[in-house]
Length: 181
Image (cartoon, one colour):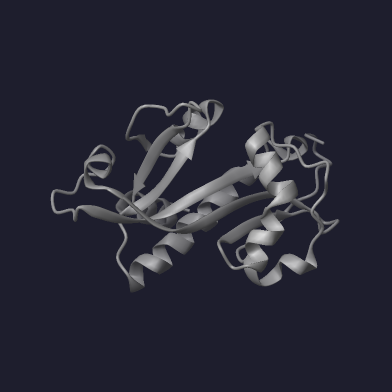
């Protein structure tokens, strides 16, 4: 599908409100087994129970071909200091946590992941206007670290036992990215 014929995807910024409108295919595969399993087995249930919000890439067929899940969280001050320039941080630093991000392999390389992430940036900015946060935190899969680094996320710790790298982008960088888009 990585051709000029690839249909444009609509970005739905609120799968929580709209999840019943779409199809969730059992063939979804982003190349990361834990994300594939989550999409196929837990995403709809998590949305129904309002445990997370999600942003989706919706194909013209109404299939969800990409998504990210986000929630409020906090991280340790020491970790945060590795990723943002702020000398006045509380012991627990408020952040938006990007829990999962995946785009079906048939749609990868088309900028869909970046569009989904930009919508997550916009949601973080809206939260920040109401309740200040310091950035967006995530645990990047080994093959995704360079993708996030290109978007100015910084590694803030060593990979864990699953080789996921904790990464953070400061809210000031997020706001600049939104302004430039």
